[in-house]
Image 1 (tube, rainbow, N blue to C red):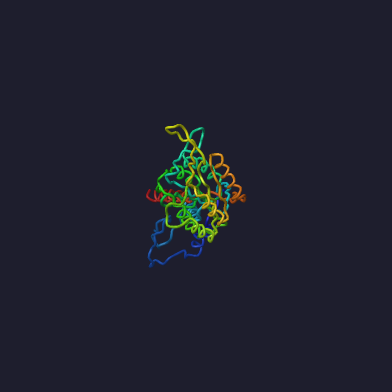
Image 2: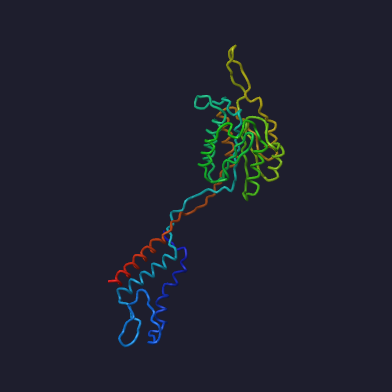
Length: 324
């Protein structure tokens, strides 16, 4: 449908008629002549008079004035209502990019992949399901970086997560700094729920803030943290004397991750393989469900340039007729 953004401007449509009716019809010969567009030349052998425009020009002038007022009223085309789910939740993902994330102890599509690749495969689907949430992305290693500010653009968050690489933020693990950065970005947001999902495969080995101190700050600012420990607890490694079993997650500090989650009202999960990681994200969907209530918006397209272009065309036509 089409609507006018300033419909009250239509009240000026009769303004030329009011001026025509109220203005004096004659001027004394001593008064200066005034040349007005769209009116005939002021000419008379006996006295100076305002010549009345012929009917053709009068109609063109009336149409031009109407189109000019219509353009000023700013017509707009409104599209069909588009449904949007708005949850009022801010959800931040913090992903570990330390050197230990290159351990290939996950199986994806029957191939051994590193831990970060497994996270990308599962987290991308999770991000796509979070319709209505504002999502953000923190990448951390030796330092913590805000890769994506809070946004409704889930595609951008997925793209930047998939473009991340191991070692991009350094080889160590600054879990406390990652939590502190999330608190800083979320503390002033006026939302109903603030959630941080932190994925790591090790212990805190870098950073300026201890993880437990950062968790206290998170709890004070009503930030709920879900921690996920990544990595298998057993894998076969080939050697000179054959294969032997090792624990690739020996450095994972589960006690710390449990304390972080419990102190903020969240939960700790252990992901030893792709299926467990996927189940964790499904569980998070249940704990932090997407809002069911819908909001709507209608796309707008400005149309004022159409009557304005018609006015310019009519003005050009009147000028051309006048010069004939």
